[in-house]
Length: 378
Length: 230
Image 1 (tube, one colour):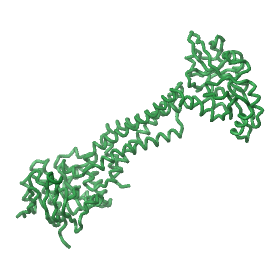
Image 2 (image 1 turned 60 degrees about the vertical axis):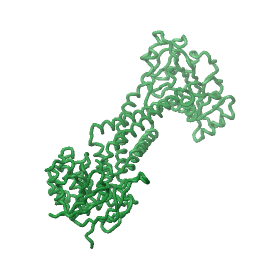
Image 3 (image 1 turned 45 degrees about the vertical axis):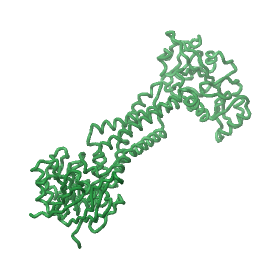
Image 4 (image 1 turned 135 degrees about the vertical axis):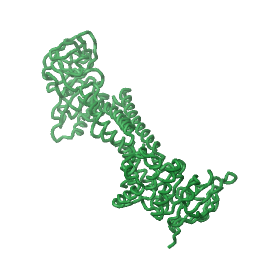
């Protein structure tokens, strides 16, 4: 690299320290805005597939055309035995899901999603703040997440409330089990759940969760179930998670709104950065004209601008990433988490660095249009 | 070997076409020899800046040829024009045009590096020029901390740093009072003679004329050469 590029690029940027600070802050806020919107999207995607992903089942068997986990409908309970008998299935358990009304001790009524679990509690909470899931074997005992304690009016093991007119006792509080629908999950045994979801008959459930035997291909076992068990649909866990996410994200207004907001966040971030870089170049046009007149090649000036873009972009992205980290930690215990994955983070950083190049393009174009003769006109 | 460093052969420059055509320079034939100092004078709009821009390879003539060190300048190849400016020319502008975000020393170093000078040579050459031009104390300062005269002295150092064969100055004293202006021009002449560079200075200040080897008077695009008798 030409030995003048970096010193000129960096000193041109940092000479006006206040402006430099404001520019880096602007870019970091733009990155944070985009990262927060994407983080919200990732958090929601994770939320609406969390139970499926944490259940540890290879296959989910459900009523045909079930759109999402939250909207499971009734299938006969004996499907559990039918699925168990399919070659390659190691074990199968049932799950019941239904909507009910929770009576807050102070009289408020809140919609909840009741999840009835089978004997080994597959599909239940994966982390506990207090109590345990096993206690829900006892009559009228339930578990909710600590995030929704205030909403439901229960704060400790032993607190009482009502669902559909039936008394419930808190057997424990899970941690980090969020709902996407604003109706908190209430975990209990299937026997208890049936009391709270009277529209299910005693011989009905919502899902069969199955694990395949070691060495078996879940896809092949899925196909066997679909061929041999009537009036149900079997999906692998990842297929069902993807279907649930797609339903909320693409088929409902909520998801589209989040996606559009995330896209707007990225767009606004890119525009702020382009505008800032272009403004800096415009301010320094007379200096660039001087450099051209003094024998600096266009490619050297282009490299100076690109270096500035990457310098500003790198600092802005780093600061924005720190802000995102802080916000993500702060939101970890809230109902709406900001989350990310390595893949998403890398993609976002690459996108912003590409925006740097895009932003430079306008500035470089301005330099290429510059006539060095202007140095003789003051 | 010829001592003609810079030769203009039939250089003309016009803008527009047909009835709109404006002839700025008409068949200028000039020869500049090693170490020769010329001053270019003329009323506003007479074509001084246009001629200086052509001599500085910043503007292509409509007709004619510019020869530097026996080589014709190819005005169609922008990259080769930049190379000529980078290696063979030194410029001094009306307002010095130093980079405001670099110190005086950094201004000189960055410029020298771009000309391909070696680090040792850069250090020695800068030291020599800032001593000659009495700029040692200003080296760590920024241009905004210097007076107009000091800035022009830095511009002289920058113009001579890479030992160019031609130095072009566009009204280097316009922003200075008479005393400072005279000092700057005397320094410029001294240094150009020491370096054996062709020097062409545009000025409006007739009091400076006796300092130069010859006067190039330009009016309506026609240049007349007058030798100075010292």
